[in-house]
Length: 450
Ligand code: S3P
Image (cartoon, rainbow, N blue to C red; front, side, top):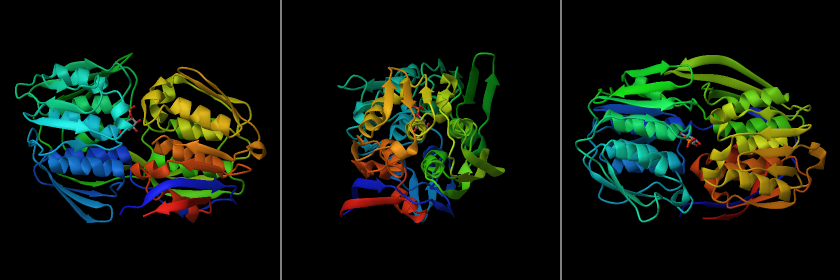
């Protein structure tokens, strides 16, 4: 039976140190599998993140007709079905906890002449799907659900799909990608209009697969277009380390006195670097070295040294898309910064694996930190690291980033922090506890069920 990580307990730790790599980027891993499944020929992926979310995508493309082979640790071979070639799956596609899997795959199948039923776990079934359903209907696909645009959803793709031009209503790389993937199966040009730039891994990877992506940057918005039935040629991909996973040891090293860590091969795509930018503004001691390009993605090595003089800052709304997954861990750093950290324009956090504004606010208050929770914002009033009480039990509500964030805060708290419902860590960072232990953090798993 699979190991279940039910709860983890973190305690006051000595300085963290070590040189290591973090697991592969989750967003890039999903896209590598999906685009690989749309080629004719063999795509080889090195450094694929082997977490539950990404494995959901791997099973889904297998069910849709691609040949998926796990060659060895991190190395996968995908033999695709070609553009428009997905076959109707024999069973429901269960995407588990993964919003990226379901939203991107709904796009990719909605313009193929097949019927697919998508579902997910308790958390995913509560998340809004209208953001992808609305644009995908415009291609001609039909969606039916008994649950108000929430999963389970039946998608019936349309053979006579028409290309669309769609302006995003929320800044979302998942929605943008769903539309671009749908557009690949449709003759003619599909265009997404984006007012706030979101992560562009799909655009970059499409180019690496040989697809022409037309990007026009206007004053107030950008237009991203693809021409349908462009051929994708199979490639070999190296997935860089995930900056979102790296954010946990980065934050921990900034917070724990005496720390110095060095991470190699981390993706630092400029549309994902908001957390690093914010930490540097707060006074964190972070050095980004050896910047290089890898299949269109910017990669670097990162050194982080304990940062005793962190100051609270105002994180502008315009930065939110560039660090959307890092607000929970930023809030932990903010808890020990001098003065308030004000995070504005973060409503989207309420629609993630949990309501992250509320989960962070509640957990910090329970740990003895003063916060103000607004509908679209969060203020964390920092205090000296010596005054973080801890002794709290946090409920991670099926949310990996909440679990890992509070585990990091526990490393500097007087009485430690216990995180319940930490199994969700397996969705993005299965070796989190081992890696944190390796660099000296005291994180234990009090009860392991196997
Ligand atoms: C992702 C986009 C983001 C992010 C998610 C991964 C992606 O979601 O929160 O973890 O891979 O495209 P939104 O596009 O909904 O902001």
